[in-house]
Structures are given as structure tokens and as C-alpha cells.
Length: 343
Image 1: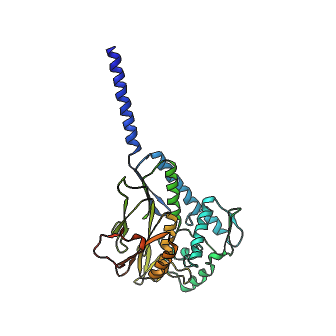
Image 2: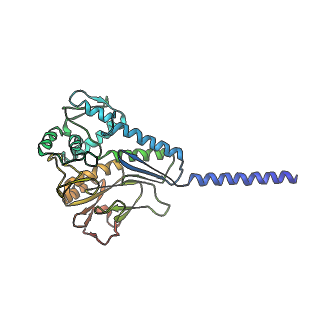
Image 3: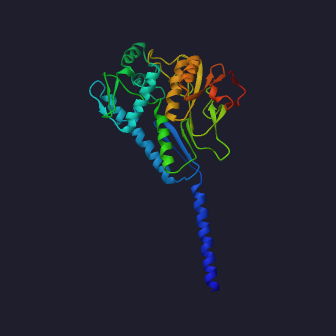
């Protein structure tokens, strides 16, 4: 009888130990970092974490790159571009809806942001080894092929047709946001409630840090290396995306040419904005708007966002003054004395 009691007690202790370990494992923090379309992708899980889930996340990231990259052979978007002016191409649900979303913002900006800017992006190739400052004649030639109104969508067949030869879709200004949202959906399906998805500074913060605190996100200093911040905001279930002249540029004869190109002139946008950060519920919207708003400048950008009512913004100007939209007042806090909040 005594031996039976000892065995029973020991079994109970072991069972409690196993339950305890299982509980700890389900709440452990796991993180992984890989490359996607030339961007560092880091996903950190804070609950219900598993290596298998991270495997699934990065498998999905790889699948998306094989669909939408224009710098990789054999992608769906690459095939679409190859058939410009020839025939429509049936796309996956993911690629089709991503182009449709980019086309929506092209229309909203009246072409200041243009999904068909691919020929110009290829010509400059800023951020790639072959980057160069093209000739004025070459620029004039390629901008003839930029016109979002000539991108034809067929919702019933999921076909896209680029109406003229030489046209080219480029999704670099929106793809990271779309995949961040896609990752978030995958995590939610697997009962993850708290996670940080970081695609090269494109942040999606799932849930909250804990029961009492939201996530505190730093806003990049556009005059310093990545990781240096000017201020912070607190968010939950939102995305924060920053676009700035510091990200990618080339220099020739003492002149810096940043990567945010004007589809109408063929040259980088001239602006007093050093960086603009967008805060939105969905990362795809924050991603597209961070570029779109940059193209508009401060006054028009503030007006546009006020009318849109679905996103907030932080503008960092070349003179180190900072402007924010109404919805961020009381939330955004400057932590660098070199910058001044002006509104």
C-alpha cells in the first residue's frame, strides 16, 4: 500500500511538471530573422509560439516573393510585365488583390503614386548594384510607359492586362505591408495574440505587450542609421511604416538621389520632408500611404489624411521640425532633443 501511494504521488508530481512545462512553452518568446525581397524580416512571437509556426510563416514569405518580386526570375508579376501589350495574365488571389490595392492608391493620388512605375524603378535601380543616374533622354523615354489607367483588371477571371508594351508593374511600395498583414492572419489562425512583425522597419504590432501596456514603437531618425529614434508612440493591433530619403539613395557629383521617384518627371521627388511615418490598422494601407503622403508634401499630406480619416502620420522635416496629425496628439513623444514638435 505504501509503495502504491508513493507511485501515485510521484505520478501526480510528474503530471504537474509536464503541465507546467507545456504552459511555459506555450508562452515562451520565439524570434526568427530572414531576408525577403532584399529586406530583413523579423517575426517575434510572445504567446503560443512554436518553431513549426515560424517555419510556416517564412514559407509563406518565400511564396510571396516568388509571386510578386520583379527582381527574381519566373514570378507572377514578372510574367505579367513580360506580357505587357500582348495579353492578359491570370494571377493568384494574392497577386491580383495586391495589384488592385495598389491601383486604388494610384487613383486616390491621381498618379502621384503609380503602380505602373516599374520602368522608372528599373532604370534607376536605386538600392541595387546596378544603380545609376540615367540620362534625361532615357528618363523621357520610360515615363511614356507609366500610366496606371492602362492597367486593366478583370475581377471575374483574376486577369490583369498591361495595355501597352514597355509597361511594368512595381509593388515595392506596398508588398511589405501586404505580406505583414498576411503573416498576422496566419498567426491569428494559430491562436497567437501577441507578436511583432518587422519587415525592414515596417512594423505590425499584434495585441498588446501585456495586460496593462501597449507596444511602444520608436520612430526612425531620418538623419541617422536605422535604430536611432526621434520619438515613440504606443499602439495595439496597428501598423507603423516609415518612408524616408535616408532609406535608399545614390550619389553623383555631390548630389544625392533618393529612391522615391516622381512618375511624372522621372526624377526623385523634391520635398522638405525627410521622413513620414504612417499609423494604420492594416500594414498594406500604412505602406502605400507612407509613399503616397511623402509625394504630396506636408500641407497637402496633412489635408489628404484629414479627409481620409483612416490613418495618422508623423512628418519629420529637413529642418528637424516634427508635425503630427490630430489622432496622435498625446500619444507621440519626442525623445531626441534635436527635434521639435511644431503642432
